[in-house]
Image 1 (cartoon, rainbow, N blue to C red):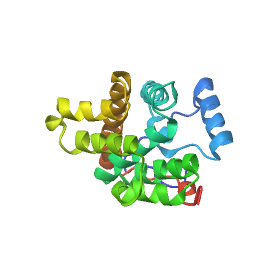
Image 2: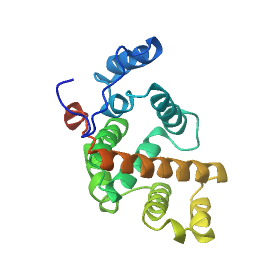
Image 3: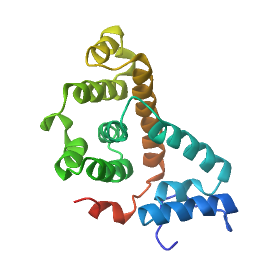
Length: 188
């Protein structure tokens, strides 16, 4: 590893345990890289496993939210938190999943600048408010989500995805985590 992924001196476990190396190999095969966030956590395999377990559950498990919607939440939260790593990485995911480079850019810059379905707009406004003013979330906010078709389970998932990215944004900011260069050119 010639480039620093974070400003902290926390090298990856070497050698990686076989299951971790297999996971990294799958990432490399499917994504063409191992995301730097995974490499950053690889100094402690238990922490890496906890991170990937929660990420995979929130972002990939069955949900009333589409994968694109979950990525949109990730980008809006990361935009509000000015998280360089997540804006780049999840902006690329929005571009890929939507097939729309403009949507990926709008999510990073200002989701209000693009036409969205009422469901998506309500979801993103909720995630934004939860990020900026969590103490101000109240029943009318949840009622608005229900009005556009979200179930209580969906609201739980929206809150958890937003909460997860608020946490990871803070870790990325605290460690000056750098995104993989490959993300910049993806799905443009």
